[in-house]
Image (cartoon, rainbow, N blue to C red; front, side, top):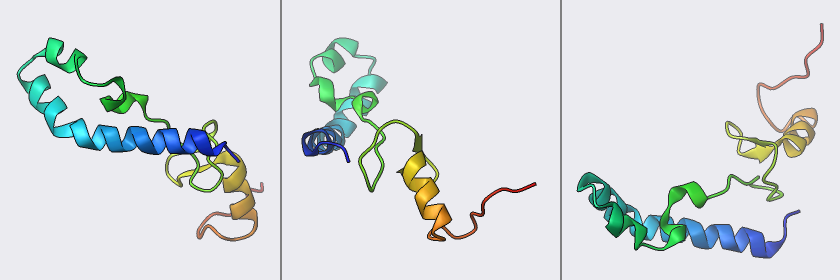
Length: 89
């Protein structure tokens, strides 16, 4: 489980990105890069981190399912993800 501070920091960044989204697109369309640089750093969507919805782990994140590889494996073996079966050949 990730530290709560990391999860909260990512939520705070997400809120900042949403707040400045319209202004960033407006400045980009006007090609005002000096204005973009004056916005807060966390207003950039690049600074967001993909995290597992269950554990908060950032590495080994599977975008399609929204969980980490470890959580995905546990859920798949328990039959909690429909349509996913263990490969055997």
